Each structure stands twice: as structure tokens, then as C-alpha cells.
Image (cartoon, rainbow, N blue to C red):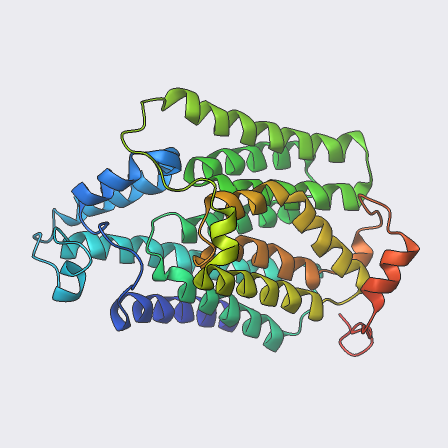
Length: 353
């Protein structure tokens, strides 16, 4: 059944990506479908620090140039970018399809890790299809770094479980994953929060667990600020992506985005195996407050993709076998415990491991 799950997850990711890029045309992304227009947008503001994904996309377009000409784009793309290149659009498609398939396979592998998650085989496939569908749905914002950022987030979580018994190897591998993930997108901090929280839940506030959390946070901060020191050219444009908090609250499309966040948060809480899982979901979001605030203040919440890394982490926490983690990073008060238990009936008896 494991092989069947992997094949189904990978093939479904391929199908979803093809449908997204060729069955629909974005009504959001413009001026981004040729190397020149891409560089014009991605060489300023926060985009210029997401160096890995930009490099991969431009290199892929260059490699494609060796096997295919740069034919004019379809009319649907020329309406979005008068300089649009069919080859460059294919580079977008190939890059994000590769990472979507890899993300689906990695998620399937993660869900099969020992007895970490309380899911039947059919439920695993259901979540895989749901996660892949949502990742595809939110790709009406065509960019090179979102799908790859989900892959690196799950890769860090998987390597934590895979190397849990080999402390030094785990530190080395997770440090490397954090470094590469931060070169791709600063949302890598969500993986740092997730892994750090799990380490403390597994061992309590010990030198080992705090060492994992502290090292990964240090790697993230050094990489984050290092990029800003190395890439310090003056910004050629005045960025509109600042102080958008009231715009997000007052604009209908962004209100739809907020509703999307709330509904997916509700979903993770509703399917949680235990009230303690709900508590960890809340702690995860609490640890991710800097990311959440950045989205509210500097992002556009109509870009539903912004919640996807939180959803992936939240759902994994919802279905995690909590008895393997005997500590809570912050003690659970009796009042909060009653709130989290409200409307809860244990799934453990119905769906044993």
C-alpha cells in the first residue's frame, strides 16, 4: 500500500500542476513571464533575497533554450505580459511541477514514518490529495518559490524524525536544510519553529532540545541578515508592499483571504486527534507570529498561498501521536484545557494506531 500511496501522490501532483498551468490562466500575476520582466520585478524589495528560486528558474529557462526556441507566447499570456515567452512560462511550469511532485512524495514518506501520525492508509491519501489540491489552487499567484518552500519545510520536519536518534547528524542536516530553505524564502522560519517545538516537546527544556531550536534559529537569522548585507544595492523602485494592515482588513478580496486562513485553521483544529494536539497547533501559530504579522502588514492576503505553510504544519500537528511527546513547551492551564476539550471526542478509540 505504501508504494501505491507514493505513486498516487506523485501522479496526482503532476495532474494538478498541469491543470493549473494549462487548464487555467492566472487573473493575478502580470508582467512576469519573460526573463526581462521577471528580473525587473525580482531584483528589488524582498524578492531580491529569494535567490535560490530565481536562480533555478532562470537556469531552467536557459537550459530549455538549448532544446527549444523562444517562440511567442500564447495570446492569454501576452495579455498579462506583452513580452511573455512561451519557453519561460514552461520553465515556471516545469520548476513548480517538479517541486510539487517532490513535495507530494515527501509528504507521503513523512506520513509513513513509523507510528508518528494517527492516520489510516485511506486517510493519508485523502490528506495528500487535499494538500496537493490546495497548493495547486493557490498557484494563481504564479511565482517560483512557493512550492519549493513547502518542499523544504517538509524536508526539515522529515529529517528531524528520520535522524531523531542521531543528534549530531540531525544538527548538521537540519542546519543545511535551514540554510538552503532561507536562501529560497524567509518562510523557512516556520520549519524552524515546528522542529524546535517538537524537540522541546520530546525532551523538555533540556540542553539538547534547546540546542536544536537555538542552532536552527541562529542559522536562519545569520542567513536572513547575511543576504541583506550581501545584496545591499539601493532599491530601484518604491515598494508598495509595506503597511498594508488596514488595506488587508478593509478590502473585500483580502477579507476573503482572512476567511480562508480562519477556515483552514478551523479544519486543523476540528480533525485534531486530541486536545493536546489542538494546543500544539495554537503554540505553533504563536511561534509563527512574526510571519503572520509580516503577512498582515506587508503581504496581500488575497494571495491565499501565504497560509499554506501554516496549514501544512498545523495538519501534521493535528494528526501526530501526542504520547510520544511528553512535555509541553508552555504549561497548559486548566481553563485553556477546558476550552480545547470543548466539542472534542477522542478519535484514539475509533482509529487506533
